Image (tube, rainbow, N blue to C red):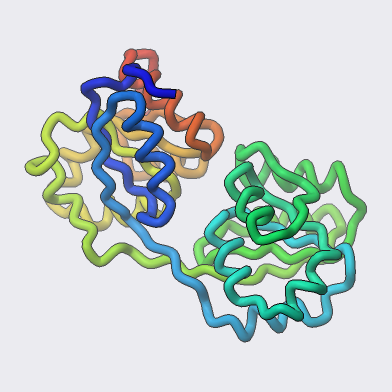
Length: 259
């Protein structure tokens, strides 16, 4: 829906470039100016180890994803014969975007989380399904919470890294203050994006800390707190809708500083 709730505001969006479009477009439709400055990029790992992890997986095992990008990386690795066997698995997604990536690949989603993160997802899995084999497909920086929580509940879980995270070579936060004056806020979609921006900011670090931050999820907000960010508005779920509401709260002056 086109509106004017964010008219006149300016945002730096640090989301990976291939995932920034929907967030940029949603902000723009509400009147915002959006500058896409990716902090990290995700690439697929070598497929051999990933494919071998599927070889002995029994039917109705759990395939758990906490990122839409990881879903796409796995799908790109699969041959036709691999895909046939995986139709009998229980595909589990952390939120709507991840679930959409699974369905786009032609698989049914058994559990779709509400986007609040890995902790909420594992609680739903434990409550909904009997203990069985599971694989958590994740990135090299993915938190161990999925495996740890499910193992503690009696599941047999393997962690498989499908995606690799790297800092964007072109990332240069030190120039943001000069090139993008009067920035309303910086939007962070992951803890790794926070770390990349802070490490690359150099002498501009203190100045950047004075710009309000939008954090997608508690883990991202916690990372910002650890770096000493002055003002943080958190979107509880890592979704476009929640991010938009966080931006509107900040512009309206309804947010509270978090230290």
